Length: 286
Ligand SMILES: [Zn+2]
Figure 1 (cartoon, rainbow, N blue to C red):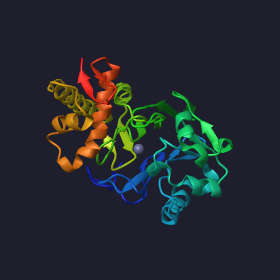
Figure 2: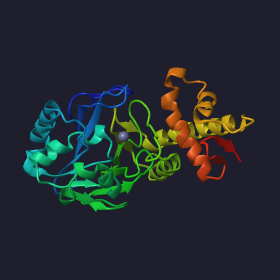
Figure 3: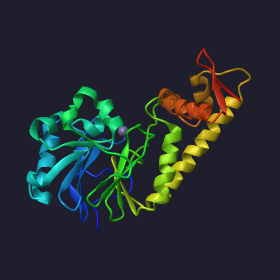
Figure 4: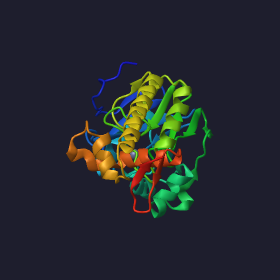
């Protein structure tokens, strides 16, 4: 299927991206360079599900409304909202949904817990790893968020939320974000050999497994840099000291953001027994 998109360019109009999948790119308060979060409409064999609804704005709802009318023959054929994870740029439309529709909100129990009072228990439908929804299959892929899930269309496409990004990078922010979990989730999905990823931000990712492999290599290269930086200190080092050495290729102005990633690598090193965190919060190699 020919798509109105170029590699690295952000989609901006609703369009059919597969026989059973419509992409609706909504303006959201997300992380630059992305300015939008892709909402998807996916047919499960019996009806349509909305996947991620990231904007509280009326204009975003209008865009979704028009797409539902054009591609799904109206809201009567929509039977739920599935959330890949709890972050605001994927759930910003939740209150809007709850006030307009009675269809359930499908999400991993950890996402439901994170949403707290934003999602009444009576409206939530918990999803577990390998759950099937008609033709669709759900995979629990923690790492970017502990309750992160991705959805297989059954036809080679994977709605991958923030597992990978068509634009920008994926932030792993502890404690809910976990580098060890993220790399394990990437490896698991890589091995399934899906044809194409449809991410939460930016254009589609053809050759998904190759893309994932390059993500894993990139993260492992950074992991080695973090471990080498840690080992280069004669005494235990603070998070920011490790960040400055391990991210010396990144502009210093971005070090506060990079330090969240550095922390994720350090905590993973502690989990693997390669580093220790002292009581004063400093890290040392073991
Ligand atoms: Zn996210």
